[in-house]
Image (cartoon, rainbow, N blue to C red; front, side, top):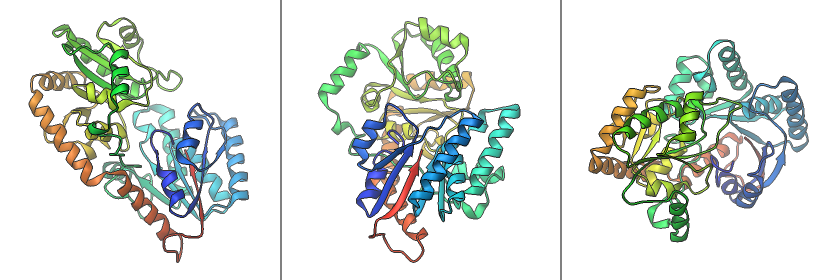
Length: 385
């Protein structure tokens, strides 16, 4: 809600909906409440498979929906989606929307993969509408028969929330904040900064990124790799080898999480996004809006935003050598990379500006409310993430 759906709940609240946000507890809540100005409810949910805790969460969501009786329940993320769609169905909520912004089983194997697939199918059966947030993801879902085709729709040209171009723009940067970021990374104009933004976990491609960077760095010690994100060891930890490199490497800067990623993008030569799976990655929209060149993996979601050698560079997913080659090429073709970045900014301005996407979602809500034009009677919508 803080990072992936920023402003969406506030927009709906300002345009006739009575919005309630439901999520697990977390340090982000005060900022979410302040930014979105909507009612909220904390119901504990875990990201891992925890059967007993999940049943308790399901019961609490059911009771909440039964009492509140929202017109629409709209869920995001796999676990919240499963619990919210089941609870809403049991509570008799007529309009149940689930947004798919990535599929966890894509990077799983064995029994875990089978369980995750069944969870996705159960979520889809419980929902009345399923919104993949990219066309490539929709095609993957069709190919794997996860969701009935008549339930699915991509809103606009993709994305769960679009991009706020009033914030992600070079002209919007605050000089004091920029100086603070420069001080944090000990910014040096003689160095070349590469950037990766996201959780420091295996399925974000951190292993391949660190290994390929290590090889390129051996021939160019003026390089720096900035990792903006936090470790999440309980879900999908990086390898022990990479953990050791991260601890000792003189060219790697680890900042922890930041709410000011646009400043790092402005200072960076390129953003590297080596993820194994995505729905429609906001970080690529953010980098594109900041005219920071993009080098990303060839996966669903990424390929909806970046066109190889037109708006960025694409390497084969999990291919450390291909990533290394694209990095080396990019470092010797600065002006071409800049041209790609300018083309990506233009594409984002045309299709992914946040107010446009918010309006499309609002219109879709209105269509689903039988016989209703744009709601003016405070229709109740619950967003669960």
